[in-house]
Image (cartoon, rainbow, N blue to C red; front, side, top):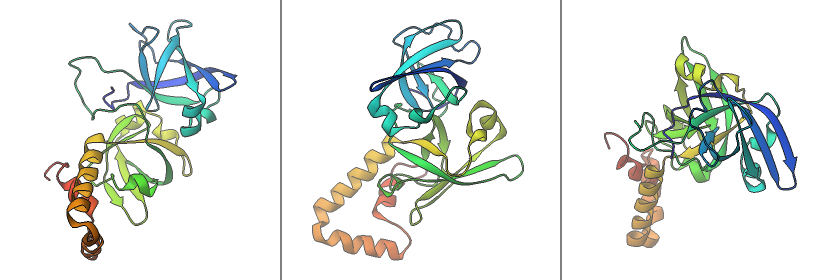
Length: 235
């Protein structure tokens, strides 16, 4: 488990490709490898990877299977690429963000960015299958960073997050450009509540559920938003 607080940026030092497997050696931030052992978990751009070798000081290697390469951006890495990294949380660790599993749910796409004074605003498009779990004021993990959704547009399937200068300093978000793919992990508690409410309404209302959905749509709401209201702060 991870906290979603990125601890630094690592750089790809070497890539070794074999049939069905890619080994990635990372140059880690100074001091990041203190106590790091083979078999430990590290979130690399939000994807939980296992340390396979420790080639030297501030270095660690990870093996990535073909399935993970196909579902993530790790297959597109080249030497010199930069990734957000976080060590696995230990017992009693402060959860400064929100609990993250390190198993990404989908790829989002950076649609646009704005740069108001001292801010950096990312607008990200996600598949409709996962947009149903994204709500303003809710949590979401993007490339391993726990962020708060500022605005969400369910019709156009995008949401926005605002980044402060410190977040940009500690992460790779300042490197991103429109069109870039991003790892998205939705907040599990919100997913459970939204799915539970929808299943309960479907069981109780049956064929009447579409009518309820149409009524809520007229009022600018949805069944999923009803579920999220039970989960979000103030709901």
